[in-house]
Image 1 (cartoon, rainbow, N blue to C red):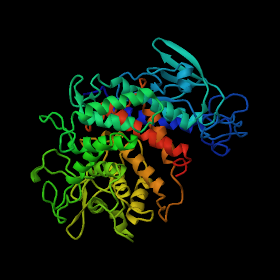
Image 2: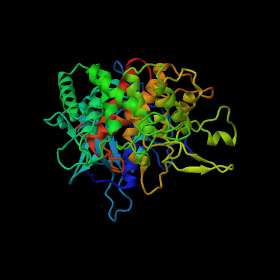
Image 3: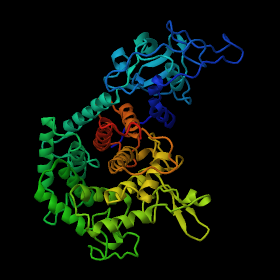
Image 4: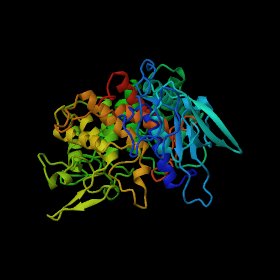
Length: 538
C-alpha cells in the first residue's frame, strides 16, 4: 500500500508543528532590541495589554492567562499541522500551508482547514511555521488573534483563540478516535485486513496487533468489548494444536509475533485462560537454546531469543530484540513463573546486545553508551570498528526501547545498572519526530520509517520503568515529561478520520491499521501514567 508523500522538507516541517504547543511557554525576559524600540523588524500590533508578538519583548509583561481548565497542563494550544511551501517550486504559493488541524482543537473550531495558507497574524505577514509559533508565545490562553488565510480565491480573516492545553482530555479524545477508526476497519469475519494484501483479506498478525491495541483501552465501551470478542473468535481459528497462530503458509505469517501479541491481549483482558496456557507453552518451547526446536548453545549469539522467521531451521534463524521484547512482554503478562529458565536466557540475549560497560568513562563511555543495537551481530544504525579488532554495533532508539523493556519484563531489579543505563540513553536521546541514532542520509529512511513502532516501544519501556520504580542515573538532574511529550506528538500526527499513518512505507507503517494500533497503545500508556500523576514530570 502506498500513500502520496510530501517532500522531505515539507514532512520535516509538518512534524515540527508540535512547536505550536509553545504558545503557552513563558515569553522571553523584557529587553530592548539593538538600536532601541522602533527599529526595523518591529513586531506586528497586539491586543491591549499584550506585548508585541515577534522579537524581544518591549514594555510590560504579558497579561496573565485565564486559569487553566481542570486537568490542564498550563500550556495553551491551537492544533495546527503545517508544511512549508517547497522552495524548489517554480512559483511557490504565498504563506504557510496548513496540512491539517487537530480534531476538536481551537483551530478547527475557528474554521481553519487543511489546504488553507496562513499569510498574516494580526495583519503582519508571517513567512514560516516556526515564526508563527514563536509569535503565538506572546498570546496567553483566552486572547484572540486574527489569522489571515488564503482559501482558493478568497482571503479570510479568522478569529482564533488559544486555549489551555488539557493533555489528558485531548489525548483521550485522540485515542478514542483511533479506536473508532480500528472498529470501523474490522471485517465481518472478526479479523482485520492484511497490511501486505490488496483488498480485505484478513490477517493473523494485523488482527493480533489491533486486538492488542483494543486490549489497552479498558472495558467501558461495549463496542470495544464486542469487537475484541469477534477478533478473538477469528484468531482462535488460526491457532494450531501446537499453540501458535498460523495462517496462509504461502505467505509470511510472523508466527512468533502474532502468537505473542495474542497472548499479551488475552492476558491484558484476562480472557481465554486455556488458550493462554497453550500460547505460552508454544512460546516457551520455541525459545532458542540447547533444547529448543533448533539446537542453539549459549556460545551462539542467537541464544535466548526467538526466531523472527516461521521455519524452525538453523539456516533461516533471525534473532533480534524486536521479536524478543514482544515475546518476553507476553510471557510476563501471562505470568510465567519468575524462576523459569526462559527469563535468564532472554536477559543474556539482551545483555549481549547492549553497549554497556560498568564504570566506562572518557572515550570508552562514547562506545559503551548504555543503548542497544538490533542484535549482538547487527544494528540498523551501523557499526564502529574498535582498536582490538572487534566492532561495536551502534545504539538507536527503538532497539534501545526494546532492550530496556526486555530487561524490565524479564525481571530486572529497581537498581539494575543495565536497565538504568538503557533508560538514561533514551532520556538523553529523547527525540520523537525521528528514531534517534539512525542516520538521516541513508537510502532507506529507517529514521522516519520506524516511527509509530518506536513510540509504542518507548512508551512501554518507560511505563515499565516507572512501575518498577527504576532508580535514576546519578547524572540525571532534570526529569523528562515523557508521557506528556509522547501524547502531544501523537495528537499532532493524527489524521482527520482518527487514523495515524507514516509517509514512509519501508516498515509498512503507511498502513493505517498498523500505525493506529501502535498509536492507540502509546496513548493508553501515556494516559495511564498521566492520570496516576506520573510521566508528566519524569
